[in-house]
Length: 414
Image 1 (cartoon, rainbow, N blue to C red):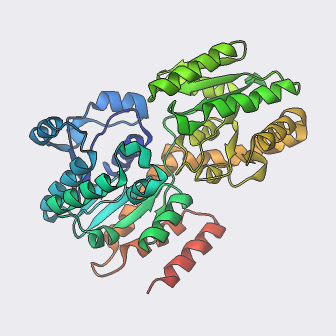
Image 2 (cartoon, one colour; image 1 turned 45 degrees about the horizontal axis):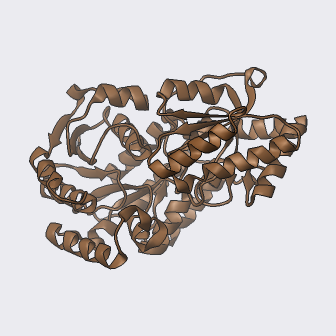
């Protein structure tokens, strides 16, 4: 049985990236001997309860770095990047003991034979797309990055040789443009099971999900649905999420209170309650711009909600690029929602479209695709482009149109 070193800073809820990591481990545990390298011990019971996996400590060898974590905690700053690069360095030092090294936290230098899952390019964050996350001037950030890379021996060229998996075509396109490598798109799984609830038994309301922070534009969704209500349909809204920005959370609480007759805020609810809330309602709405994938949208679609998204990022892929569900402005959103509410045949067509997309984000689909990718990865001769084989493997499970696209990608490679 082949051995895989699976490297992940943290395997714990919440977080979409952590959920993907948990399901990657679930997908691989049956066919491979897994060793997990993380910062700290894993509470598998907590992971399973939140992400819907079935992981047991007895199924893995677990390596942690407690002394390094204690040392990092002495720093006056989080030193997140240095900690990530240190973990990659530890993985490279052990790589020759394994048949493959896997990482689920964006770009990584894993040594000679690695697989990386990219949620959003780290390099783009530092170019300004998410620069506000770093809380320091760009010149300081660049110096910190350079020092961290030198201390840990990070190699950009080794990173580019990885088999790269991306969470969306949007992320894959950015990866292609930035690094000149061709990722394989594997959509993340919606967490857990969503029961089938007939449309007639669902409430005529909306659900939005996500961290309660400014880039989620929660106030814009409330504005859109307030305009819908002003036009006649008395829909309601459930806002579900965890506050990560105290000032923004306070402003949303005030806005919810001002619209308490039709808006309700749910903070830090458990996963079963979230699933129940989604499947009890007919519609979903999402407002973030340029979401790399949109785990919240995948949850809503998997739960059978007709979901409206902003015309940007990976979220448009989740709704199948259907223009009826994609809006570019507040007015556009209001008009499209009103039509869906008022025209039964139009609404039925949207429901059928969403139903056709639900399986794409199921955990079973994700597990199947990952197992196929890994199987073909290990069948590749050492000097063959493993990324091309990954693409070819996925063509076996994709539609004719997607298969044709992947075939063209393979033929373009030298």
